[in-house]
Length: 185
Image: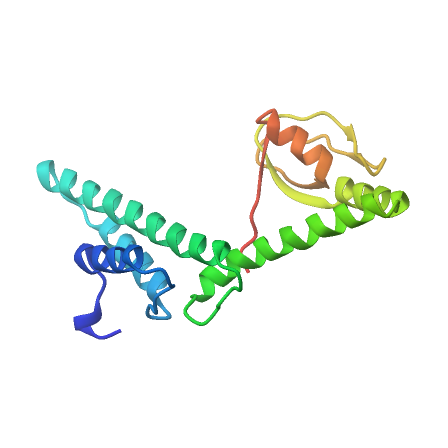
């Protein structure tokens, strides 16, 4: 991106405005979200006092809100359209839409299995989901537990990292005893 193409609040606002005024998904620079992330990151690194600090914080909030608005508008256009046109979508947006497609496929799979009397298949899906593993960071002491897979886990102390079956992990997350770790590739 050249110096004249650098992202700032004005160019971001213009992009959001153009996107809202169009029915189609507009073309944006392929590295738009990364450049925007750099812009926000650089803003956050700057240290100011007094009114300048408040201005910086307002600028960060406006940029964040415009970013969320733009992303949501672009995704909504794609989801609501008959045939998904991936031409102008950015890689980050395609990543999100992959999950949407997987959700549709899973919904169709469950509906089809239910309508066609494939209860064994549904039982298998249910069991696999309950026992799929989730990586957690433990926040409080946890006594030994028996997992959905009938294996023993723990005991755990704060800051331990554990891999537990989904059902058990969700129970600990709900009780705020653990938090899910999202691995970055």
